[in-house]
Image (cartoon, rainbow, N blue to C red; front, side, top):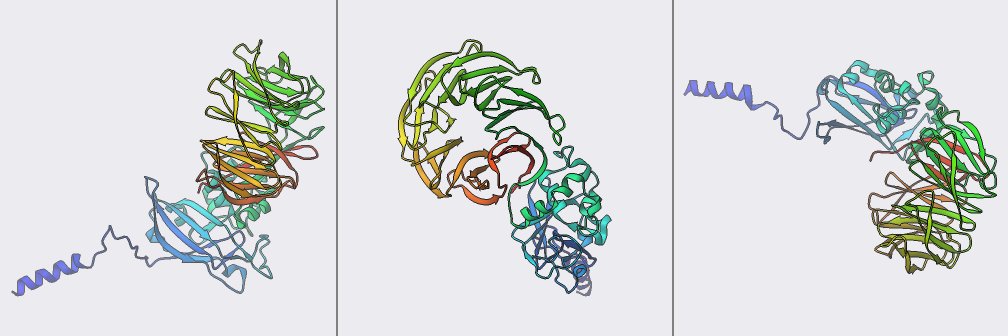
Length: 484
């Protein structure tokens, strides 16, 4: 009996109190270090620390709160239980809410704090946190790395992201001299965007001068073609995107309205009709044909059919199987002057100004037929994606359409133009600002933020974001979208 009790006691000591490795609740280790978080320093912010597994799933292992204090160096601190981190494992630090006591990063405590509406993150290996010890930081720089990532970092951010110790050891007040030029020049805009939860963050990297406002733009390889109305088409070398070089203007018509790029052919809508340029030699565009269709406003292509709308309320279909000999196969009368068009499956949607949104069937592309008009008072823009249609009514807002029926209206007065990119709907307003809506659910756009530019007149998403100003000029941005 005594032997049995001794054996039971030994088993209990060895195994009875051991931690279950599959337990969902993490037990904090004894050894801890202090880390810091903030644009400057964030007090009373929630810190969530996740372990990331190879299948990309995450598990919350700790939750902390950043400190408050009378002096700046005591604000924004939180504990990391260092011997709970594995060197080769990846961890995600998420800092939300709180109050920033050094919003301008001058190393001095502000008189009043700034409320943080956004979040900043750091995705980092355990060994980096260990190496930095008490100098690990979750900052706006670690958030840029999280959004853009080392693998996708281009020439503007490679310098900044090359050394992870500099990224995750970055203290805004102490290490500003380590920022790359592009981040330093956009620092305050980055901080403002993050603190106000704006998305995407826009890093301005360059600009293009124009003689007139830009109405449309196309990018082919390292060259831009900008439609500048009466000034013609400006050709710009973008090899060095931060300092674009103008190669001059093509003045083939009195008035150039819009451009449409398909392969190495540039379709030009101008005051004389349609012109087609061969830009296989981008710095030396060659005109290959012209079709007189009156003052053309815009064009779209599906397969070997080009659809075009002119200023005389006419809508054309052209067979462009032979690029040198397009044939007009059909034309329709619209009630007003078409403002915008988009194609989705076997439909083409025409924003027909005060006459609503026209829907034409293009099962037979060369013989389109308008079969329905949706009652939208002032349809001035439209875009299509995955079966959902988004139309702008300048006087009321955004209209969401599914199966040719209006299913939702969103009040947002003053929209001039709609664009789609990265599950976002961008609404350019007549005051020069841009409202951004998130399209996680296509039928229910959710307002995300307003980007203040004071000049937005049009835009083009390519590798970069080009925003046309109302007066003149094109600003070039590197857009950083939130992954979540």
